[in-house]
Length: 242
View: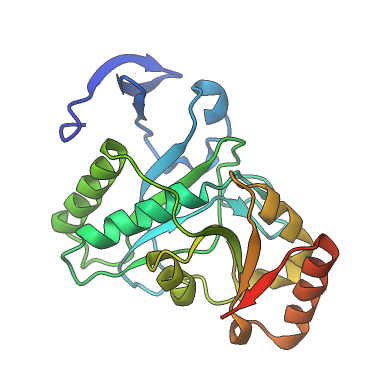
């Protein structure tokens, strides 16, 4: 708030609330993965959630990802087998903003689509963390990058696409986005490709809808890849293999 010069106003929904022009900031006491009702709390074109990142492997990173659950579970918020609206161009530009301003040795990466909340408004998470090596320098880097992002005008870069395959931290898709080739909506990692029946949702639950699919060809077991290809053919969606 200090970097943006935005002032606190009356609370909204029992939460601290800051506003200046079209920019609004809502402070959550806990990680907002269960805040499905945020759409009703305030109307906006885009929600950007800032949060600390957790890594089971203890790997430090700056991460950006869309929201939703490929699996029939909502233990981490959202709804089972439901995806929130993605914001491919805004998410890619935020990825590039953090990458450009990052002077640390902590990498910047997409994460696969995962966890809540479930929203009909375009949204994404921006996070930093993953290990005890994260310091105030990294938090400051993220804060400045986000402030720069919301203060600047941005052009849509690349083609809106859905990403299929690879790991939870998809290096190939991150590089393609940073190069300006694609702006990814939802990312379906290889361990979620058993839910290829959700590809239509992943393509359409995006503003704008994904124009094509980009497949990490060697990043999916062949049987699951064939199921995904069959589904894309049914939908009439072109794909590119990387």
